[in-house]
Image (cartoon, rainbow, N blue to C red; front, side, top):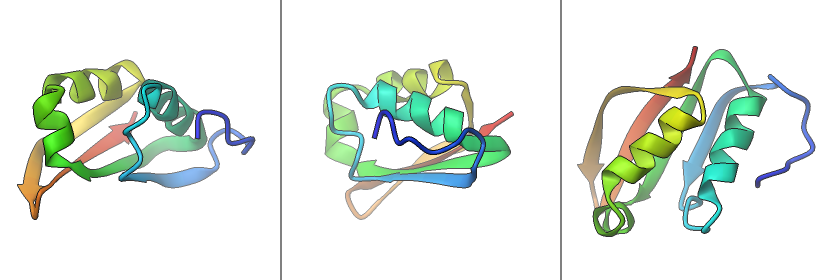
Length: 88
């Protein structure tokens, strides 16, 4: 997922669901930033236990350092954390 081979700015939305578990998940986020058009969205649905153990701030920092801006606050439902970010 860190090198999809797709052209830049081709997506309106990138969704990560059960996919940010690799040690190089920050590479995945950078690839999503490359692929998403300006004004496009990043949607994340990941197991809450993963980010409670490894600190939610780490995930939020990785999203921000990849270039996205988190919109609103993360929400927790059904053992998952959900969050949205936009590319501006």
